[in-house]
Length: 302
Image (cartoon, rainbow, N blue to C red; front, side, top):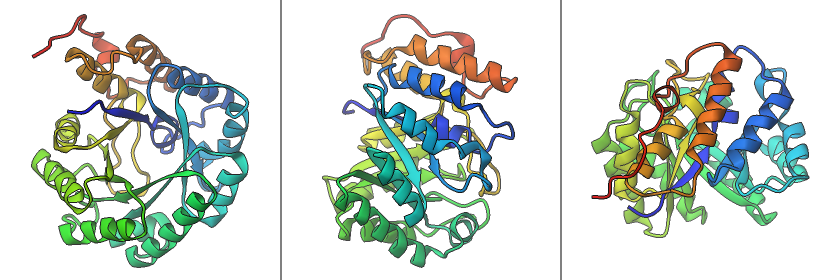
């Protein structure tokens, strides 16, 4: 496997479904520490209406504050529409993430639009962001299945991917929003995207709803995915899917990579420290494993 990039999405995907709103100062502390741990990208928040998603109401303030600081990690933000893009551009967000659901039902619940309309809308918004000089990542949500519809036709997923590629958008995330993926499916989808264009940067966003999260992440990496999206403590879940469950834990993946000598540049202890603080603040145990067990010391090269 090539060296894997880590995109920490805990501050956005991890916190968006939480009932308790985390204070801005606490979020800033977590984001700063994760951003300085050696991970490659940190998703700070999403540009949505604060009255509809109070957990994300301080996204503008977070970016405004972080823009004055120096961090090794790239900061990303999720944009759903043109108004969100205007906010992101005004704040100088370096990496803008956008997505379309391959599930008609999930798309309508999430955005109020069907997939076909959403594809046109998101591509136009992504191209506007790129024209403004920003890096852009687009995703296919519910790519491996939907909690409402069940199986999603593979051709439908690849149709969205093809539309992205035809628009010149080559940083593409395959998102297992409902957690329905299995390793053979993940491997096949990543390989099919790379067969369409070997230069594509494939990102995998995997949820652990049914316990296959880490297996699916490794299948994606072995098939050629370049980047993995994870969340501190395995926190998270889309509030618009039927059964919301967490992501693969950042510190668990980093621990696994370091066991075989990869990503030794990441400060695993720092990540574990953040996750301990997140769990303490939320007042409950998180799904992640390594922050509770502690890491295995040393590497096993084979």
